Length: 222
Image 1: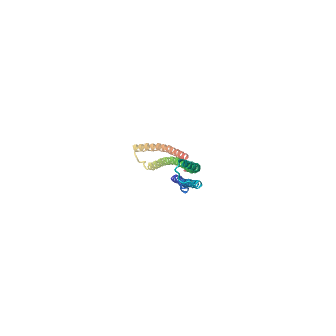
Image 2 (image 1 turned 180 degrees about the horizontal axis):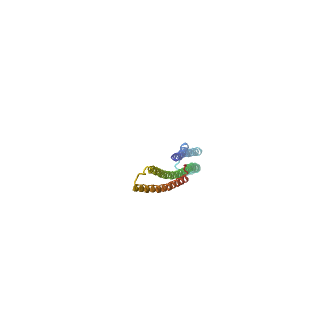
Image 3 (image 1 turned 90 degrees about the vertical axis):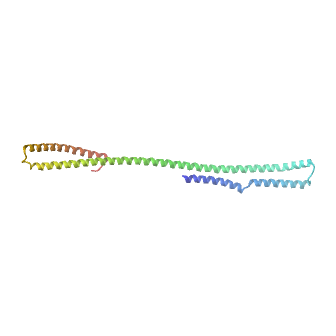
C-alpha cells in the first residue's frame, strides 16, 4: 500500500513538472512582447517613411501621431493578448486534467487499500475462529484424557481387589485348624469381601458404561 501512494505522488509531481516544462519550452509572454515591439517599430518606420516628418514641435502633429500609433498597434496588441489568454487557459485546462487523472489514480489506490484491509480483517476473523475451534478441541482432548485416566485407575483398583479376594480364597482352604472366634472373624471378612466384590461388579458396569459414552461422544476407537 505505501508503494501505491508513492506512485500517486510521483504521478502528480510528474504532471506538475510537465505543465512547467510546457511554459518553459514556449515562452509565450516573450513572444507577445517581441511581436508587440516589432509591430510598434514597423508602425513607427512606416509613419516616418510615409509622411516624411521629423520631430515636430507642434502638439497637433504629436496628437495625430498618437492616434495613428494607437489605432494601429492597439488592435494588434489586443489580439495578441486574447491569444495569450487563450493559451494560458489551455495550459490551465491541461493542468486540471492531469490533476484529475492523479486524483482518480489516488481514489483507485484508496479503494484497493480498503479492499486489502477488508480481506485482512476477514483473515483475522477466520484465524480467531480457527483458534477458538482449536481450543475447544484441546479442551475435549484434555477431558477425554482425564476421563481415560480415571477409568484406567478404576480398572487397576478393581484388578487389585480381585487379586486380593482370590488370595484370600486360597488361604481359606489352609485355616481349618483355627479357633471358633478366628473362623467366625474369617467368615465375616469373607462376607465383606463377597459384598465388596458385588459392589466391584457394579463399578465395572458403571465404568464400562462411561467408557462407551465417551467413545460415542468423541468418536473414539476402542
